[in-house]
Image (cartoon, rainbow, N blue to C red; front, side, top):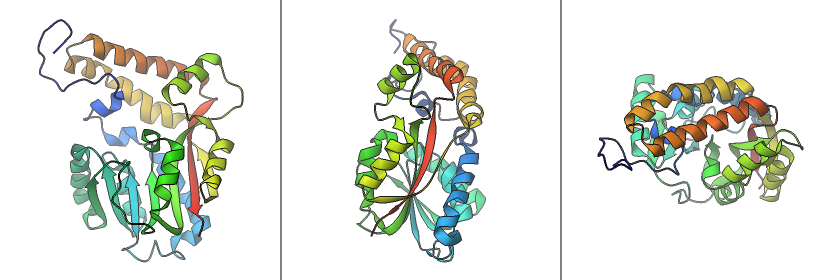
Length: 272
């Protein structure tokens, strides 16, 4: 129901949810920075002896968890590059249904198991995973909590690969600082994040930041392309307009200050 009392045939609108979680028909290929997925795989190779030494490449039973997988773009890329068994986890079964369909089409269904679960209550036994991948997801529980809570699931020397909002400079415009500290208080520079990983019992293996085109071409512009359909879906309600306005303000902020903030990818190894 809209604020003016008119009933609309649309999903319930939670103003606190992120916009992209409500635009379920946006192609996942536009949401996930494909370049970053490929680059992270390449970044891991030197430290894992091109994955063969640790067995991830040769033994298809080696377990990998993709936490907060969404509709599975990263899951599919990982399954295509690693001969590993991947458990793809999301709390939305609709997303996992899409992933299952895509895995069948790609001939990767035997490697991928989907699981409806909260990343706050994962069902894995201790020291059973060779790798954890969490792209654009750990912010839901918080970086420090996530890296500490998930560590017990990794085998000694298991890999953790996560993306996290990261400051690129020590000094930032006030409006940018205020916006992101309000949206995500754990935002910090890369050295702080690396220190948190080390304090939690990991050894840093690598880090890189997503380039500007990942934000604009693969994230913000596809989002903008869906604004009109989103507003139509919710009958141009005040709540929907406010969500679009807030997202556009964030886009404008990024376009002004893109050299101060990005997502960093952090690759770390659990210490024995």
